[in-house]
Image (tube, rainbow, N blue to C red; front, side, top):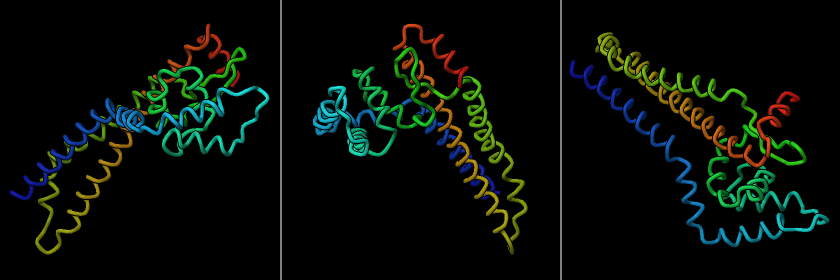
Length: 222
């Protein structure tokens, strides 16, 4: 009975810790990357080099793609998104570069460069943000609730443990707990990525005079 109570309590505590970590991650994760960007004193030199070499250049100058990619990755502290995305943010949102760069690192795969009214824009490939957000949040809630049921009914599994062969049930409990942790974190990551992609997409559309109509037309063509 004591062992059963200990297992149920341990599973409940793990579930609570995951929920707390999920809230913290969803609200503050990108700030960690943002603070890392701003603390690096060499970043000013990297930014000047990149801007003078690839942004503030004459139209006739054709920058080497390979070197540009290396400098872009160096500016963004590691291989992340294509260098064209870096150019887009610097040209259109220079005052929000670090903020958008931190967000884009986790959601850049949802974006693509398109041309609307002779203006290049980063458009999100996702069309139904609320549907995807609701779906992944449902999965997050479902897997989190499974912790509760596992904690409440763990005694039913514990009673099946015999002195001679307890390892089978213990293995099932451990694997179920690890599986729920993995799926809960995955659902949380996807929910956060969709939310950040929507936020970036709303900001990127602001550079067009009539962005709503233009992007809808372009989306229909695709």
